Image (cartoon, rainbow, N blue to C red):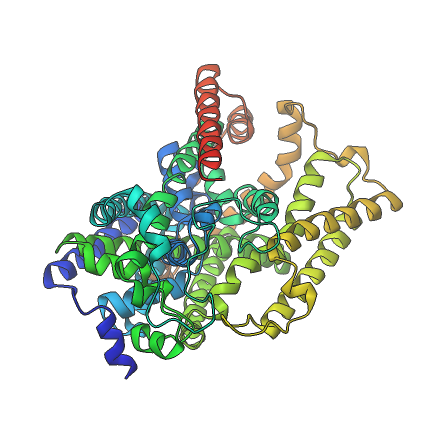
Length: 585
């Protein structure tokens, strides 16, 4: 019954041979780009593998920031939530990439779930393991072009089909499914569907949480998340860091129009399927009794896109999934290798660290495959709904520490430790209660404790942020302050001090490289070639050259003209943001 019904949900159009050819060409192009980047990468060094040699330009940095942030979960999640509740979800993006990718693979393309996900994982892992961050950034750039182009094409077709933005305002409130549940508001679009700022108590995204809670989550994500920070560290210099961030910010304007509004259009065009509320009907439509809003975007793709372009759009969804996977793979590998393994083995050579990083990525791929049955079992119910709040329970303590460490010199190690621990414990308790009690279905009585049912997770995010900050401040004040010599000066470091502080680490690195000059057996050379490890080249530098290399990697001086250009663009982006908030508030 479920299999036949799933086919029915996508019966009026299907993936043709032309579409499959486009998808295959995309996968081959993506793999070729990754392999090409792999052979251009200095794969035998830590900087080359984990930081792309620190020579990325602003275009690739911006594209990679955007591709890492906009996963397939954004297409499926934003469109699905937009179909259910309107435009407020544009205030933040969801990120359930494996589940979202499985929806496209299983329902739109028709592949077996395991086969499709394993193929994408394999392709993503090949160039991530071998090429490091540079391969990831180059393929992210390719995938950004595909994602944006495909999303814009579908947006135009969807708006033409429905009759324009004004028609959405008229038709969306009338998109009621049949049958409806008697004496219930289930299936009825919210009266605030076209407002970003919603009721502080009853709104699905209350305005205090929208303004302050989402600001906390966004600041954490874009300022301290390893995935995005690592891309900025790979830039040539501060000019390209800022330029990449500006490009990503311009691209971030698109999701409201390319995903949220198309999701609402999908509900208008296919109301009985997308907005179903009767569990029996939803089970027939999409094999998910919890609801079918998650299929809003893939439904639109399969039904509206012409032959060939449909394949392009499906390739764009795979691009979104792969870009997110490779970003997580590379950044997680960096954290494990540099922050954990180096503590376990303090004297580990560059070669050992590179091999450990690649093995860790393989482990992540295996874990991803093992996780598939969990995603299948959840079918987008609790997992998909709660994933929005998980960040709200875990990120605020990290951001509070991040800000205090930068802005308040009195912050010390004990304050940072206890502020983080207390904040994480409180957040985990709330998250455990959420998962334990679950959310009542539409029409059911809410029997959850008041702290869960009456306190929105974005409101809790605000509380948790200030709670963690207060604990950090109090503990720091009652314990010994950090010695002044350990404070980082905000003035530019004199080059002689930079060299003095870096010289010991350079000596250690040189010693580890000398150990690699011994003759290597042939079988080991083959393994090194497969793993992408290259024997370090002996480079003799004078003391002045070494000092200049350090200066280039650490200086933050900017060209006045470029600085003015970037600042003007940042100001323009602020104006655009204020206009959009005012227009849709």
